[in-house]
Length: 228
Image (cartoon, rainbow, N blue to C red; front, side, top):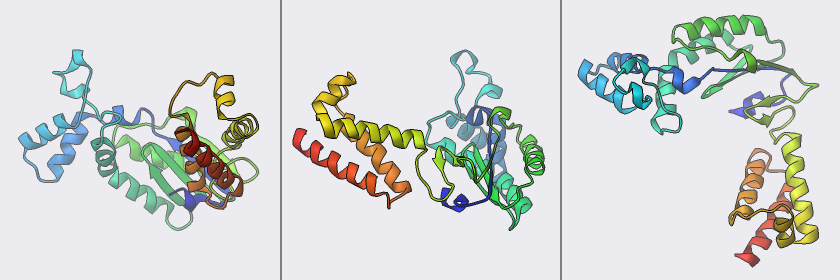
């Protein structure tokens, strides 16, 4: 979904505050009821897919979608379906809109950011959800435009700081060897090389044409084949 926001003049990103914990039991139960399930079945399905602290386990109003459960992203998307449709209609063809869990992104040539924020807030009120006021970002092309931790100015890639971090690690590995590098940084994880390979591969997934990263991947794979 990030590719839709590449090379845009302006980008606005918003974040839903306490996303999963804010999607409460009653909201989920009502969703199942609207699908046509009986009150009893809706109750049990909502109980099965929600969580609450032990001291409040008998208080259904305190139950919420748990972070990390496989059902939570699916349910949240279904519950926010009308929200996404209404935001999409508001944006029409002049503004690109995407949502990934609690991250909302808008891009275009001339974004009416205040109008968007006002409309989003009104739609969120229907679901008893709120925006995180500390995570409202408006970005023009002359600054790093970052969505969900990925730079999208001219192409998708990792932020400069993360690219430099990978570059530095690979410099020391290639110059002094993997054992010396691990000793210098006091790294004791056995999966350090696969972990670093994973980070490089993720960066390549964003930008497959990055020749520097391709070389790092090749070098690291050769080192891993020798030590495993």
